[in-house]
Length: 278
Length: 299
Image 1 (cartoon, rainbow over the protein chains, first blue to last red):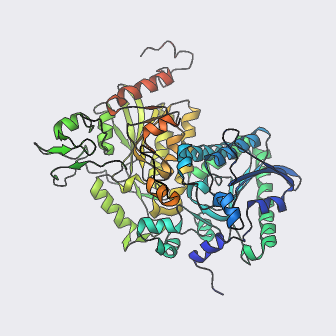
Image 2 (image 1 turned 120 degrees about the horizontal axis):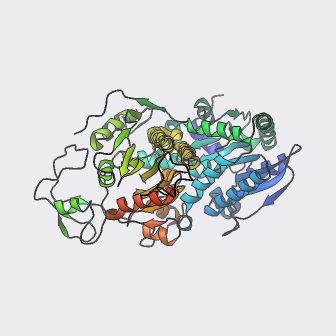
Image 3 (image 1 turned 135 degrees about the vertical axis):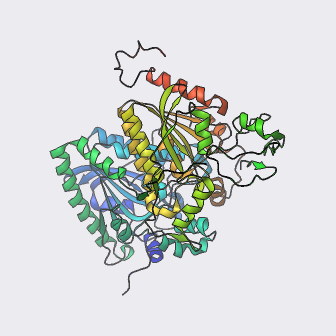
């Protein structure tokens, strides 16, 4: 059996029957309670928040929420958050900080909502502020890309101490369709763009951006229970490590390491000679 | 869409770090009011139409010349240039070739120019986007230069003034470009802990990952009149929503009305206003002055 191509993985990452954030919440947390609203405008159904026990430990969970069918997807805006979704996440992160609760995030969105109202309410401002808040909290944070990691809208929930990816999840600067439209002026060349852009979990792991690739011996949509169990096991392992670090070195140290991690990402070269002007 | 400036008679392409050279007797047609403007008058007016106040785009070097005290600008990290982490090629053009072409066209090595300068005597660090370099798209070099500028400003006791303009993330560096967003946000923490001001000036056009990262977490957010600013571009929004966008949508004026920016500052007043804001926020304290002595220091 040959490994799926990047484009086939995009299809798997988007599969409707793939477990979504609330499936993980209800399986992995004991008696979870969903928390709603941004306290300012409205409750965004594309971002879900919950509090509950993971093992014996109280945690908060944040995640993008896609639907399992078209009706649900329309209600959830296909998992594309509006500014109020990111502001809800910010509020929950502040709650986690206040009560020293570890944060688990599930990343699964094609993009932040690109609508007129989202722009009016400051989509860019909300994403930047959510990134800043998640980078600032002095509690352990773990992100899992469970499906589509689409651009800044996904990133806003992903900048954690640890970033894990399911084998068939993707993380991209823009959707392959958008990339193909921009670079080839032809959205139909998306399969080619998916390959060129290096968006698979294996590649992100190789780049050092993802810490761990969680295998999917059977694609997640065919084995939801097994996938959720494997994600739970990986979360438990990483959370143990982070909790030890948190207790031994302190919350400030945890944050310093997180900042150092994101400060270091990038590839460039240096040219010795001075630029010639004029 | 915002109109673009076109020169009436195209000048031969010649590189000049302080802006395109304009031969004598050249007239420009303002894309907004359609008036013919004498080019020298236009340049003296910082590329703003004297009739209708249309703000044309400036190159990074023109911007620096319009803001920094003459001779005060010292460039930082000019040696950083793009690598090709993905081995990217599109339309049979490898990314390194694309970079060479952008360098030739813009006269810059990357899409962000950083350095130290003074503005009316106030020491600052500048980070200025060059839209002429691949649409000021943010890749690793843009992110790294911004981060270094913020950290160096914090170490030197300078405020950071960023002129943010961008078409979005640099597709050619894939996910590395995306992860420059948190990098720039982390770097700004250095300024925050040194209690030094970070002022962002959003200039036309400012979209995507730049707007959704360092540009909108600044202490003060200013914008030039008429600048187009947002997360998703107008074309994308129209395609997705199939709605006609209202006129003035995503303009600086629209954002001011919606509570997203502190003020709109016309280009002619930017130097004065930037120096004023930095002085007000810092009490014009000298880098070495302790908070106790700062009331006593005089501007």
